[in-house]
Image (cartoon, rainbow, N blue to C red; front, side, top):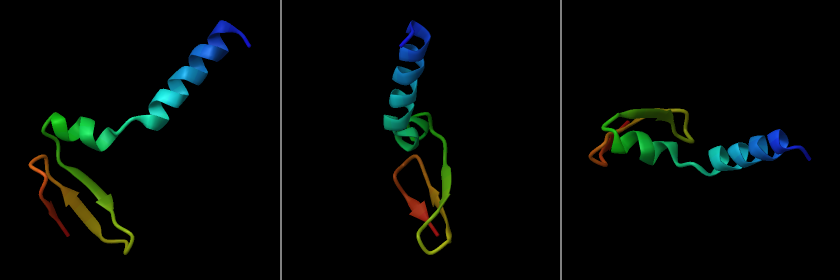
Length: 51
């Protein structure tokens, strides 16, 4: 395996383990996602959510 392959693999593993929700909330961003019922849910930085 080349150095470039090892670096790419390490980056891929790091990205797969990242908690993007926590990182974006820490920046004060509101997140929107679909729940299991297919409804849009808003996750606010203060920890609140709405359906």
